Image (cartoon, rainbow, N blue to C red; front, side, top):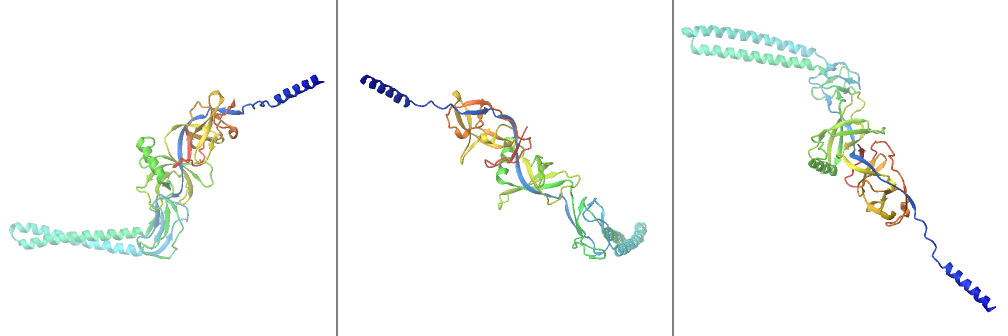
Length: 395
């Protein structure tokens, strides 16, 4: 009986010892890893602005009078030199006729004075005329010529006035509404008759932040990208109802100073507009070439760990242990995030299961792939550094 009790006690001790053993460790988590995509990246910076006419002219008369004809249709295209208004020409024809009569009289007087001078020149050697009388003939001939010149100038002025009775478009473009009616009396240099704006080409004007201006100057100094002050850097524009940047142009102007009130500098691009679709005042969103081409690596946004102070990714290291790498991020390209620094082309980036990982954790890697998620349309990026590129394209 005692022997039996001892045997039972031994069995219980063995069972207790077995129950206190550590349970086996769980297997390492399985994660997908893949090398980042490699692309040649060009940044595009994003701006908001409006279209402006290169030529914007308020039409005012150069002579006063009553409107006798309106020769244009409101809101339509007009050519350079096209007739817009006609002011009653009759008073100006009469003034021209009077001025031309004065020219004829002055010409006759000049002819008489020239004839008398010629006669005096033949008499002077024989002393048949005094030197004083001869000098008077010379002065009279010169005065007659001067009077003829003045009469001709007055006639030319009256001829110009008659021409100004036809108010013509000074530039080709699109005309506004008429602001004078038939019979209205208009005053030279004061009454606004209408407005003409050019439409092809057209300007796109925007203001850039001081930080962007400094970035461009630094790039120009290092040869990475020429300044738009000197080079026609490309610009692409998207209208309010468009998804693509279908309007293309070039930079033509950067202002000479930064506005101290806003901390911005004014710039302008020129856009071809052959069908006149774009009109002054229209809102648009532009992207300007923001860098030279540089090599970049692309990873999915969900592979990036973000906190208030840093951006990081997990990379597969030796013995299947993961390492955390701090990275500098760029814009979105092809639906993926550009990594400017912190990664190498051969690194294996962890694509999923990031919430379960800690630096140094062992994982069971499986091969994954990183594929483009969108076309090369350069969508807007969320700024991550200052000044950030708003968009980018791969080459």
